Length: 64
Image: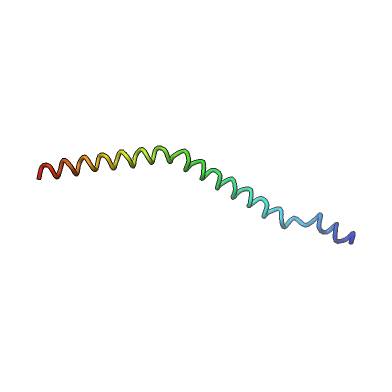
């Protein structure tokens, strides 16, 4: 039993997994933060584009 505990303390295989889990969580968190930051601007740009296209199409239809 003592040898098992000593070997368990020396084993570092799981440490790499923990590092990857933390790194992945950080990347996902940064991705969510980026999407949250940019989403307002994208909504505004999409609305503006839709309105401009609607105006252009109405003007084009009126000319014909």
